[in-house]
Image 1: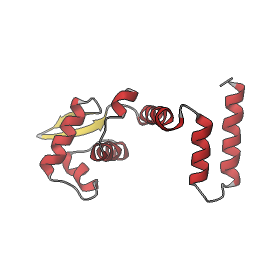
Image 2: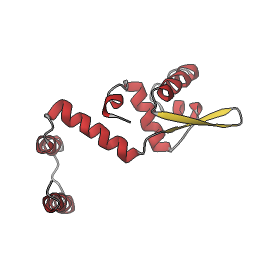
Image 3: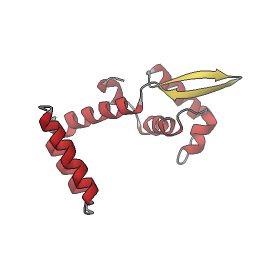
Length: 129
């Protein structure tokens, strides 16, 4: 999934893809059951078909039922979404994005979370990023 295609998902489309990531795969009935305020069966089936045309999901047939799954590994999709977010809202600045995340979460970070962040920063320094 390129950064360009990730930007072209509407709210419902994002919800559907998120559901498929959570489930691993699912039928129209499975997806519809997991949607908040779900549209009709036909509407969900149509959205899945459209997502397949856009290259975000694929299907396999089990009897007469289509089982849908994301086409891109979740971690790769996350990186693509983060790149897009950084570019769109933070002018590519990782430090500005991290500062926003830290401000957003008003609770105190645990000692373990602070250690993990420090380790990640140190690893990035060592790798010359």
